[in-house]
Length: 255
Image 1 (cartoon, rainbow, N blue to C red):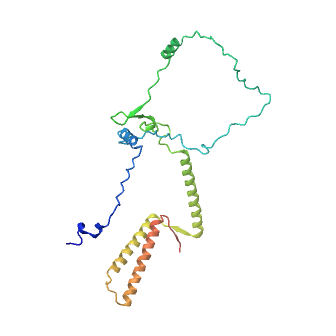
Image 2 (image 1 turned 90 degrees about the horizontal axis):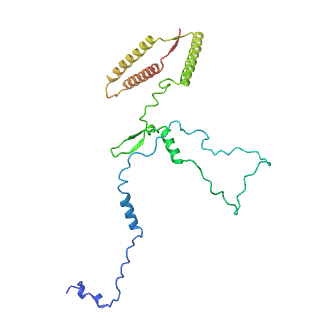
Image 3 (image 1 turned 120 degrees about the horizontal axis):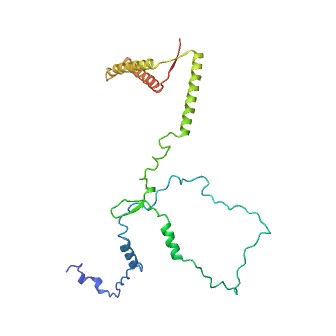
């Protein structure tokens, strides 16, 4: 017989009174039904966010300095002789009864409606076929800014600033001209500057072509010196070209 067989195991001879305890009931929230009802109730309305319901703020309602600070009421001067408020009526006092008015409110309201000016409907726009309505004026669809008198006109402070900048530039140019006249400096014209720039670029191309024609394997000191010299010349030419391209006005000393 197989000793591992469960029917003939030695452990079956030991009496056992232990029983597996029953599983406790699963916890169920008391709000489960209410949550399900709320979820089904608002599920259709929350399927899509839709257009924003917040009005676009007006440019005139910008935040101003000290606008959110609380202001105290003006201080009043205490006057001892100031008349006091009327006293509270007594419990035994009775209000005046039986006062009637001869005014016909029906005829008065009808006359006010007939003689009054009709109220203009508020302009709105519909952005969906389902009929979602929004105010037209804060939406930005009304071209009210291009109809202003000062639309497209340069503001006065910008014109004033441009004049100040122009005046400062003229004074600076005058100061530079005077100093250059004293130091005997000469200003390069646009043609001379362009000629110098093209000459530097041509020299750089020649040096670059010469450096490209060197052998790939440099095994001697003269070749290394030659390569270093060409690289230094190219670097100096690149620096000079960058300086001339960066500065439109160049002055040189007269010899």
